[in-house]
Amino acid sequence: MRRRLFQGAIGLLLLAAGITWVLKNYEQVEVEVEANIAEAVKTNPLIAAERFLLANGHPARSVSGRGLIEQLPPPSDTLIINNLFSSLSAEREQALLDWVKDGGHLFITPKKSWSKNENSGYGLLDKLGIHRHGSDFTFFGLSLDALADDESIRFRFPGIDAPLEAFFRNSTWLHSDNRPPDFSIPRGGLAGQGDAPEAPEEYHLVQLEQGKGRVTVTSDNLFLTNDLIGKHDHAWLLYHLTTNPGEIWLLYDKAMPSLWKLLVEQASPLLAAAALLLTLLLWYAMRRSGPLLEPVDYRRRDLIEHLEATSRFYRRNGETPSIARSTQELVLGLWQSQHSCLARMREQDQADWISDHSGLARDEVKLALFTDATNREQLIRQGQLIQLLRLRIHRG
Image 1 (cartoon, rainbow, N blue to C red):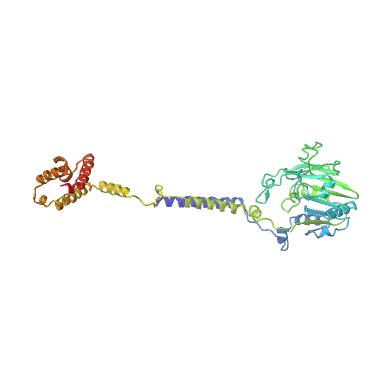
Image 2: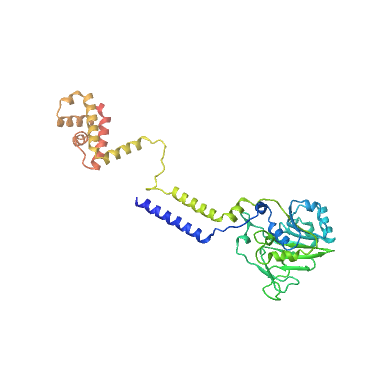
């Protein structure tokens, strides 16, 4: 009873602590959300960037699929591809490059890193001499950098006196094989006014002039997504990069995020509570009372084991003398049935007669048939003599 009360008290304390933590760390607020944007946010990671550009006078539109790559917009426009497809044909890549040379602005992010042992899959980037390096390892659909603390970098932008600040994944970077970029954000950025980058050959953003247009390549595009566009100077970096006079097209994959990613991002407290509950249930199911039982052996026992078990049972219950007496009476009865003269004799005469006809000494016959054993050695000897008398019945 006390144990149950203790467990109940512990449960109430844990529940109270959990409620206190929720009330302390969460606040109920009212937010006005457009009815038609809630669904768009789930599938369009660039919807916030589109709304920012529109609010600041840049004509912008986000679309999904490959339609714009197959049917390119006017060369005065800007085309932002969220994750560049690695399966584009050589003809389509050449068409994109020609579109840039005619005045278009191509803003792309490679979807995978380049390896010396295999083809990069990006013929367009190979022609520009730009490769993406680093690790794309993810945990439940989230990059390790996204799970780590936000460490932004500072950099300079042409025409702006104060340094800008942005977040890029440190595990991926770009390398330019050819001429220096016309504009770049070095990996590590600038720590202060006029400082040089730590590694000039490694970049997070590279911009190259191509004919009348230009190509902008980023190592990752997290700063453009709905979750990060409002942090640091991400929105203004996008604003200053998209200076073409035409429309800005934001091309994205209309793919739902993985279930694990949604749970980690939107329901991490629920996951933690479920893990704790599962741990408690497993602990409760593994509890036991008393010592562990030895496994039951269902193999057949031999006769000796049964006899030994029976003997231990009778000895433990103090019935050994009665068993020995029954055996004595049985063997004496066998002798009397074979030799009727024994039935009319006294115990002393029976011992003498059986001694003469069995070959055993008179004291041995008396121990075997007419004496109660008082110790273990005497009991063992009595059993041996009874067995001999049983075997020598017919000798008389």
